[in-house]
Length: 633
Image 1 (cartoon, rainbow, N blue to C red):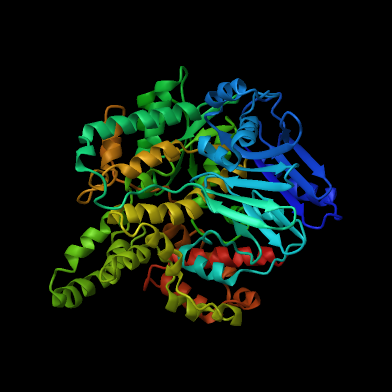
Image 2: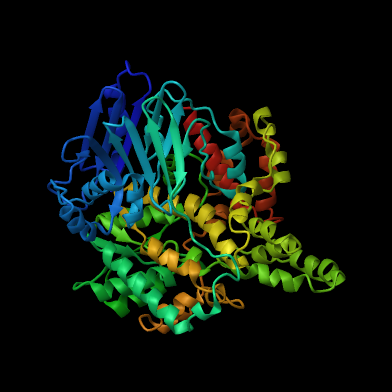
């Protein structure tokens, strides 16, 4: 695991500034505190910071091929490098290291961009081809590892693992107001945009080629292969037990590959089904106790430590846990700073703290991220079916009885907030399928955003943020409705929220996180599984429950989804209230110049008076303000 960066200049007479490249590299030292490395050749510069995981002695980067015509820097891990190496050696390649990085280089020699078809892993890497005078950059299939880039026309291309690396150059810091407009609805800036107009995210499953003359080409090499509904002979359908057995095999193999490490490793244990499944397979595959790390809260409805302890006892793990206190005022700005752009998923707080705890014991952890998007784990994955039934009720009953009753439900601060879910449901149940799914995700709708904006630049943004989702729905228009939802969530929420949160918060502590549930072979197989096996009725993850039923305590198998979220509703009303009101004070909002102070104050007043649950809008605006203040420093 590392941080990488670099640049290619388009003027053949120009030269990369070594000091600037060093600044770009040092900006991401937290991603790789063990060593640094550079490749400089006139118009090209590659930099990297290394966190030593595999091949501790000879795996320093950049790495060259046999004749020095190719040079590579890698952020991530290639899990099947052990299996790939003998074949490459048989083809005549000579290895100088025992690293997974060198495997990519020799594959690229033989296959070019098609080398990506052979890789199993999480990665973002860059290869400089001296003969062709071109840079080849690729990002893994699911977007587990980040890659940002910017093209300065007629001048250069720059790239890096984090935005802060690119900001060490003279790149413009002008905000991307369309990306920020989408952020206020989704609490993340969606790919391929960033918060900065000139900086972009390379989408997952894509590669980029930049030639020395400035020509840039971007191509997709992989996507989740959901079938069109009704295609394929029904004779290919298998009994449920056969699917369960194959998924169990694929998941076990994924965990086995991801246990490869030359440094100590452990696992994040939330007490939920996904992380507990990983613990179960790790315990089966390791000949020593698994190190588990868990976070809890004082508020009972948010605290999963009892479930985590049950799992730790069942598998006799070496268990570590921490109860998070709400005294986080100094921590919140630091967390915002690590994301480089507005990001308002407040589960980043416990993710940061559990990463900090784990790093004291290990360098690598496995986690259960991705299970909800693969196995249909969100209530939204069956809400569309409930909405169809709801719309069959007489309109008078819906509009005159149910909706008013739901509207009067008192606001709850519990984790599983029935009032929030019910209110969101009745206001969106009438919407078309695609719009209804988007409605579940929205923090601030279009009217609410327009009421917030003070800046003319914001008012020039003439679009509905639903347009972020629309292309993904279009891409799988013929698939089963559940598969459409899983596809959209994989390309939006998982990509730009879940994976970003885990990457930034873990790497803030130089901790590598691996995600075995997102092994691409498992993802591809699950895409072909009949959707009715993944979700039926009001059940979530029924298929995964069957997969791990023989391995887990019954309480965990039957448990309901809680989610790894802190008690923000409680904290906002108590310990964080003064901090929030100060950060969102009329004076600071006015100084920001982008939002209307009176509109922000109204959101706060409605929340604290109990008229409306504005936890998520408040946190979204707060992170926006803190990010913007950092930008101006």
